[in-house]
Structure formats: structure tokens, C-alpha cells
Length: 346
Image (cartoon, rainbow, N blue to C red; front, side, top):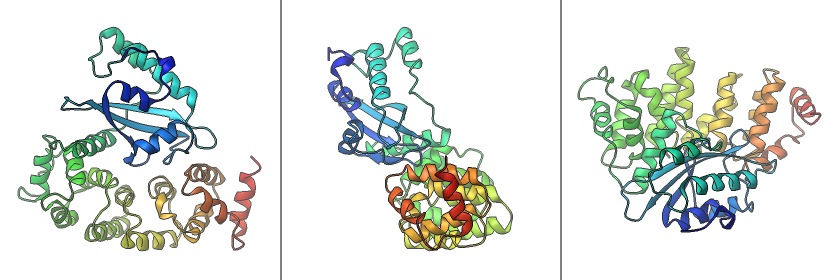
């Protein structure tokens, strides 16, 4: 490809012109695949970004040449406008930097000078370790590649053959590989059998891996039971990890019943309220559930937290219409009415 950034109008076009196969994932909230058709509409500002996180789109772009065995990964963060549309200027600037650094061949190993140019890219970011592990696992399954070398030690540990104290050789990548391959062999059954026996050192990173996976009913039951145990033990950190594990399973009837019960219970901690909005927002599939959550949110009389979470939820295209309905409910408490009034004074 011999062209300049002036002729390239999108990342999709840049990847296609370099003869790359590619896949796009959101990694801001969970790891969610974005189809090529959807991404093209997002890029052309025809569609709001589906999973905004703190006013940004956080993307993992996996691309590879047809003859290549391993993909390249870009982690890119773009600002969104007030309508949730991708900032076109930032996207164009990103393309210009890439073309200047690498030209048309995105698969070349960059020289030191090119590496320096790429590192200056203001849109690049480094995800936390558990997200890196998750995207590596998801991409390897999508491309029908074998699991990492950490997979087998994780399987051996989770099978319980060496005892539950022998967790020191279990890596985050291995746990992520098991989670993404939950449908392989007897991995689901293995996790269900192991779940109540796992120490916190393994359970917490496992929950981070499970948050990207639609889980079977028996495993959801184990998670909710272990959550209640963590609460009774006053282990709030573990309880939050267990909640996160349900992030991609909120539409399952077991999860929905559990989460609706949680939202309708006594006052929730600030961290729990943040996790529900940040990771479990897809539970808000009905105005009543969202309304009850807002009433919970204002119980602590923290207008700053209310405003921050409202701003986060109203930016999500699927949640926005329900949220705007919920705040108009005639049944709202005086505290909620006051919080909403303060919100619109800003």
C-alpha cells in the first residue's frame, strides 16, 4: 500500500488496505466483540459507541496477515463526544501517526525510530494485567489457536489433584484461558466442583476472568452462594470480585433474581453500587430495576457519587432511555427528586 493518511478515512480502511484480517473488541467495561459492520458505523459517527467508559472508547484491535500465525494487538483509547459518538479528529490523528511510523505495512517490526514515533501515540494505553490476559485468551479462541502454556497448570490445579494450597504456579493467563474455554472438555464441571474450595488468591483473579463469559446456571449458583458467605465473613473485597463474575451473565434468570434481590435489599456499599453500574449495567433491562437502583444510590445522600454514576449510565445507549424514564417516576422519594434537581442545575 503506497498511500498517505490523507487518503485513509478510517481505521477499518487502514487495516483493509494493509491486507490485514482483523477483529475489534471493547475492553473498557468487559471484553465485548464489536462486529466490523458495527465498528464501521461507529467510525463514521452513525452509531454511538455501545460501551463507553469514562467518556472514552477503549479498544483492542487484533490484526494479522493471512500467512501469519500470531496477531498484533493495539490498545487504543479515543474520546467520545456528548452524544457518545467517536471523536473524528482523534481517530484521524491516530491514523496519521500510524501511517507516518509504519507506512503501509502494519506487520513490519518497527525500527527504533518508528518505535519512538509509535510510543508518542497519545491514544495508546496499557490495560491492566487481567484485561491483557482476557483479550489474549479471547483472541486465541477466536483464531482457533492453542491456549497459552499457562493453561495446563491452571487445569491441573483446578482439578484439585495437587491440593488447594498448591496455587503458587497458577497464573492469571491460565485462569483466563480456562474461563474462555469453559465449554471445552469438562472445564465447566471442573470449575463448579472446585469453586467452593478455592482460596481467595485464586478465586479473585478467576472472577475477573469469568466476567467476560456467559456462565452456566450451576456456576452462577456457586458464585451467589460464595458471595453470601463472603458478606457474612465481612470480606467485602472478595464479595465485589464475586459480583463482577456475573457481568456477562446478568440476563440469566438466576443472576437476575439474585441481583434484583440485592438492589432491593438494605443499603449497599459505595463500592457495590459502583460495581453494579460499571460492570453489571445490563441488569438494568427494566425501568423498575433501574429506578430501585437509583433509590439505593441516593440512600447515602452522596450527590457527587449520584452525579458520577448518572453520567456513566446515561452515556450507555441501551441504558439511557430507561434512565430518563426512571428519573421521571411519580413514585420517586424526596431524596431522589432532590438529587435529580441538583443534577440538572449543573
